[in-house]
Every structure is written in structure tokens, then in C-alpha cells.
Image (cartoon, rainbow, N blue to C red; front, side):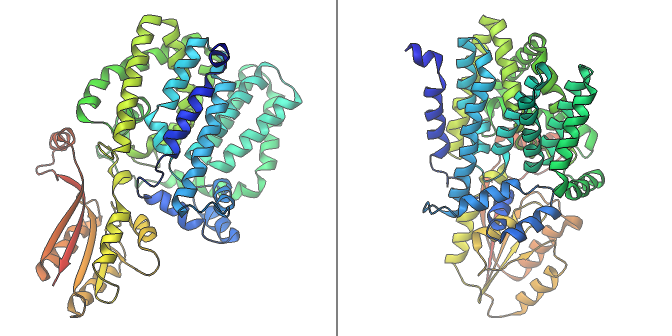
Length: 494
């Protein structure tokens, strides 16, 4: 027992592995996952070309490409997701050895329990995206920032340069946030020469990809087409911060009652994190600039449901601050940690039962929808139309495969193509997958649906019900007749 108390990760790591590896095919690959799965089927030269034109560096894609070549005998998506789990488990070891070991015995156990059972970490560690790799790189890089600023040496300097470079090649947001944090930490100590040296070495290592980084920064600066629930970028910030906090504390698969009651736990966790920041100023000087810079980077680019995934790299540091605060206020801390663990268990249960997802896109059963379409007809006597504004055409492309092409509502050629299909007698069925919330330009989705309904009878297959709380919130925001479901597959049949 003494050995286990000194090495609690020996108990928590197998539990996390069980949770993360269990039924990796539970959810259908959603849009960004489907992009990964499609890209890594291509030759390496084509992967590099696509990455250079995208806002995602190549390191993760190249790792997945190499991993997918291993003869593991797994489904293509499941094998790619397994690599993300490996990164998450490595991040657990790194977080424990580099950070949690600084805590007292009780605090270390609290940290590992909250980390292992985190429904937020569970959700994103099981996606074939770079989120868990970002988490691993950030955990290591932040430790090197702390070590190099405290006691500079060529070893810690080399480790800092290597981890910062890996961060930039993994994703621009954590890479730039950590690079800026390292500079701030060194400038606080007036170590200007060290800061210049670190920046120069990172720049040399990143020289092959510097042009793509500059292009991505330019795209970020001109990006204005982000969906907002409030209608304005500035007023959307509280929504994004709130969803980020909910995801980190209780996950994103949350029943209404748990979400409402968990609000008090959320406030308590935030208060403990503030208290922890007052007691661990070194950690605060790392997490605060990294979180602020990271949030500015992602808030302009993505809508609120996708903030937590992009900010996962600061999760270990915010959790450390909360646990540090809990250790300073033992009674309140014990209550808070117990309540957070209860929320985590609820989130894990909801995740595996596919209920209560707040981001409906993660839970829409695209693979089941594609299988239903394939079983009900063929490409000769049916056609498929997909809402390109607020549904998931990339996930549908991956699920259907190359043998079943489809039309996208945002394609200018879609309207005349649908008209031709309606005039073609041999086309017996037209499928239309769409979000019930039409955010398309000029209400294209509604226009397509009216056109098809006027020509053919329809059967509606609904997916992912909105909860009573979500419907009330939609009404409060001015929606007169909120939809009951997130997505619909409309089956138009002659």
C-alpha cells in the first residue's frame, strides 16, 4: 500500500486506459475527424500539401499516417482514435510526474482522480484529432518553461526549444501561446538574451513551415464567418467562456438537471482555481498568458461548441490550480472535489449511453444514416443532398465512401442538379440530410426542402433531440417555434 500511495498513477492509468479504449467506435466520426481519416489515406506529399493550405500543421497527420500503416487489424477510424488515446495516456504520465508530484499526497490523488474521470478529457482523447497530442506537448513544454526560467542549463534549454517547436508543428494555437508564455516568463526575469536565443532556435527549426504559419495568421486576421448565437462576436464571448467552463468541469454530455445543479459546483471550482493561483504564482504565470492567448486565437476562429477542444492544452494547469486551492481549503475543497467527481461520473455515463450531448454534431449517427441510405437504394435510382451550412458533409463523405456521391446545398450546381433529378423518372428517392436550424445563405435549405416537398411525399427521420432546457433557451432567444430535433434525414420517395 505504501508503494501505491507513492505511485497512485499505477491505479489510475489502467482505469483511464479502460475508459478510453472501450468501444472506440461508439460515435460516428464527425466532420473534423472525417477530414483526418480522409487526409491520411493520401500519399505523404499530398498530406503536406493539404496541411500547408489549411490551418493545421503537419505533425499530427504524419504521425497518424505512420500509425495507420501498422497491421493492427482495426477499423480505420478506431485505429486512428487509438493513437489519440495513446497520446492521452502519455499526457497522464507527464502530468503526474512533471506537475502533480509537486502536490501533497492527497492533492496528487485528487488531481489524478479528476483527470482520469474527466468526461471532457474522455470525449476528446477518443477523437482522431490532435487534441490529446496538444495536451501532451503543452504539459511537457510548460514544465520546461518552469525549469528553464528557474535554473537555466543547456539541457533544459534544449528541452524547451524542442517542446515549443513540437507545439508549433502540432497546432498553431498552443504553439504560439506557449512560445509567448516562455518569452513572458524570461522577460519577467530580465533574461533578454535567453529569450532571443530560444526564439532564434525555434525559428530556425520552424523555418520549413514559416510560410504556412504566416498564411494561417493572415487567414485568422481576416476571418469573420463564425456562427454566433447572440449575433455579435463581442457578446458571444461570455457564451464561449461559459461553455468552456462547463465542458472542463462536467463534460459536454450533461442532463438538464445536472447542468443546472452543477452551476454551483462550477462557481466553487472557479473560486478554488483563483485561490490556487494566489498560492502558486509560478504556475499562474504560465496558465494565465497561455489561456488568454489561446482563447483569443480560437474564439475568433470557431463557434462556442468547439472552444473546449481547442483549449484542452490548458486543462492540466487549470485543474492543478483548482486542486491547489482545494488543498488550501480542505473542507470546502473536499466538498468541491467530491461534487466534481460526481459530475464526472454522470458525464462518463452519459457519454457511453450517447445522451445529453450539448454539441449535437458529435453524437449524430452519420454512419447509421449512411448505412440506411445504402440499404434503401443505389446510386442509379436515388440521390443524396446534404446541408453544407450546418450539417456534416465531410462526415457523410467518409461514411458513404467514394461509390455514393452527393450534392451539397452550398454548391451553385446543386439547384439545377436537383431540378434535373426531379424531372428524371428513374430517380425514385432523394435523401436530404439537414440541420433543423437553417443558417444557410438566403435560406437555401428551406428552399430545397420546399422544392422537394412540392414534388414528392416525404418521410422524416429525426436525430438528436433537444432537451427541454435547450428548447426553453431557444424560445428565450426569440425563436418562436423551436425544433424538437437537431438533424433530420428527409426521405423523398415517389
